[in-house]
Length: 130
Image (cartoon, rainbow, N blue to C red; front, side, top):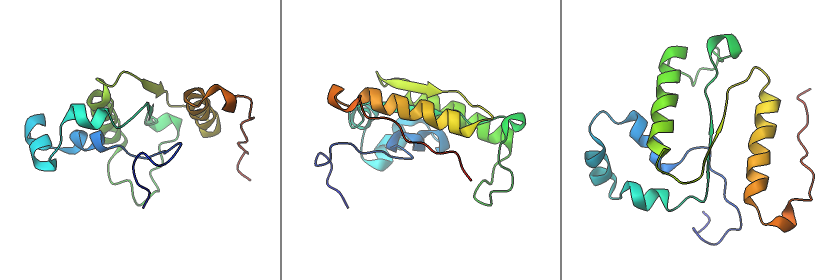
């Protein structure tokens, strides 16, 4: 496991604040149970990129066995996750799209913009799936 603060760039599929969207109680109880605070957790992230959940007509993948919620439930969770991160000063939202490669490219552009300027000249290499 990498030690926090010892990597140049760390990307996470989920963040520690996401748990608020799934918590049935109030926020204060959540933070007491996990032994932290919203402020402490937000401070761990330089930027947050929120990829919006697609609507049914945009290709929400119902065949994925890991997706146990309906499209409406997934969209409601998406709203709660975005609300949980709303106090972070650098939240970037990537809207849902039928073309996932375009959505991924937008996320990569946001990531590149967060890097030092010396890294901006490197081209993005995102290949279309076969």
